Image 1 (cartoon, rainbow, N blue to C red):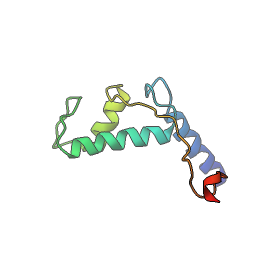
Image 2 (image 1 turned 120 degrees about the vertical axis):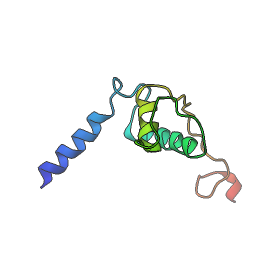
Image 3 (image 1 turned 60 degrees about the horizontal axis):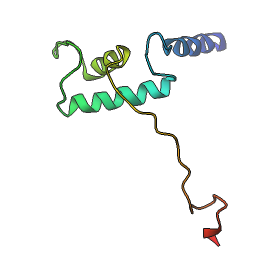
Amino acid sequence: MHGTDKEARAARAAAVSTEQWPGIDSSFRLIVVAAQGNKQLTRGALPRVEADPRRRRNTSIALEEVRRGLVPFTDIPKVRARGGAGDGSEADE
C-alpha cells in the first residue's frame, strides 16, 4: 500500500506545475488562492470565466479562474512578531 501512497503524492505534486497554474508554486498556495476566489463568488462576485451556475460549483469556477491566471494575488513575506512570548526578545523580562 505504500507504493500507492507514493504514487498519489507524486500525482498531487505534478498537478501543481507552473505551466498549468501560473504564479502558483505549491499546492498550499493553490488551495488558499482558490478558497479566496470561492469566498468572493459566494459573496456575489461575478465569475471571471463563463460558467453555467446550474452546472458548476463556485469551487470549480474558482479553480478554473486560477488555472487561467485570472486571479491576481500578492505574496506577502512573513514578518516575525516583536515582543511575543518565546521569541527571545528582551520585552519578556
